[in-house]
Image (cartoon, rainbow, N blue to C red; front, side):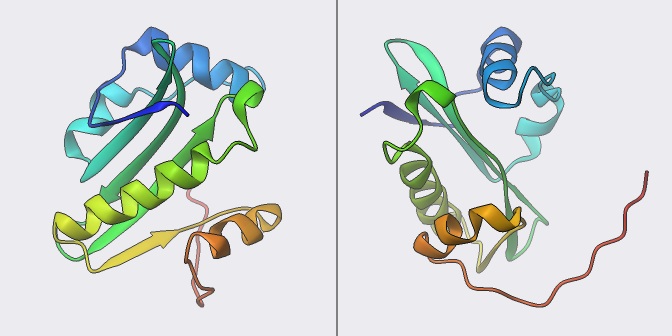
Length: 128
C-alpha cells in the first residue's frame, strides 16, 4: 500500500505526471496557487512517486469540499482512493469542518457511497 502523506505540496512535475496518466493527458491545475488555501490535501506515494491525490477546499467555516480525487491508472482498484478519501474526511473533521461535500460523475456513485457520502439536492451554474 502506498504511503499517505498529509499536506505534501507535490511539485508541478509530480502533478503533471500524475494528471497526464490519470486524466487522459490533461494538464494539471496550478496547485501552487490552490493548495495554500486548502483545508488539507493528501498525496499517495509509491516508491517515491506521486500515485494518488485528493484536495479538501473549504469556506473558512464549517463546509469543506472534496476535490480532485485521483489515482494513477496502473494502481487503481487497490483501495488507494478509498484510503485517501477516508483520511481526508478524518483530517477535515479534526480541522473543524462539520460538512464535507463532493460532486462526482454518476459512475462514481457506488465509490462515494461506500466512503460514507449520501445523496443531496444541489444546484449548479456553469460559468464558462
